Length: 208
Length: 211
Image (cartoon, rainbow over all chains, first blue to last red):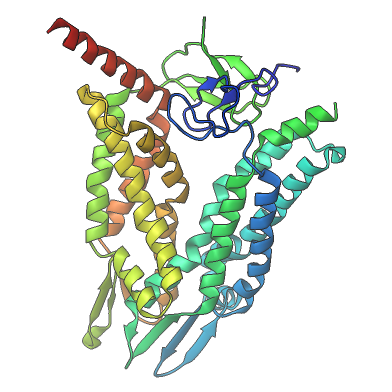
């Protein structure tokens, strides 16, 4: 299949309104003539930006899993929970379904997302890896769909903190781990937004 | 001649052809959906967006969950109450993340949809249409209301042994809202916005010329 791309034809497609237009010669900041969105043939500094967000997310992934996310104090007991110990508690207290949801959404999914995006950037940087662009694009789409669910545990901690706040009986407080964790989710979302799947096809085409 | 379209995923140029109602055009190279033919047209999107706006207000005014402590008392919280509580515990950034993904982003998404579609449907071309057009998809990426629903369920399970937890009425509104916004996503055809905008502008010029 050797159909021409917009870039090969000297055209730029708007990612917002999908209008294909011919850029005006000599303009530095191109804008879509219809919806005024900034126009780029490929997302700007794609590799640099994606790596920056990914590295920051990898670094924060450690405190997000090591530091406690939530403290619960009551007259009878007091505990400090990381995400993993929260999962273990749920599993032992007879809620295996909820425990599995949190395990996948909070621990496995951010990691898979980070590894997946890293593989995609490497595939663009090294066209010699011969990654099939179509499979790469499929991975990218999947990352985009499932990525959002990682926020579940952070929201749950917030709801619990709002509900249980009578110091005499019991109190639940949100701890620093929640911040690191939320930042991991936001950073991986930014990383996947700065990645441009069109570059996968460019890399494939450049290698023949 | 049919207009050109470039696949957002692989940049392949293709000609845009007319589709039967409810049809879907796929990229010839990578198989990504290029565009759909809107099933219902603009009136459906207007109706759904307005309904979403009403539900959004209800969902944010009613409690999402309540805690029955027996003689000890009764506490309840709204979505915004969650933000307040987290902020009050000295976690402003975590509170900001909940505020942005749970309240502000969904509000922007719904607001932008109503702002675009209602005037266009009434025959006007709203001021700053291009801004609203770009805000809507950006806000959709960050709007995590469905995730919030799951979080309420998780919180209820976690508290299960400690106290009697009552799911709040807002949850019904949230559930309906998520269904509505998904429907808007499926029924909404962005190309229609520009078709209507151009038609409305042309119509007004024609009317002014007649006077």
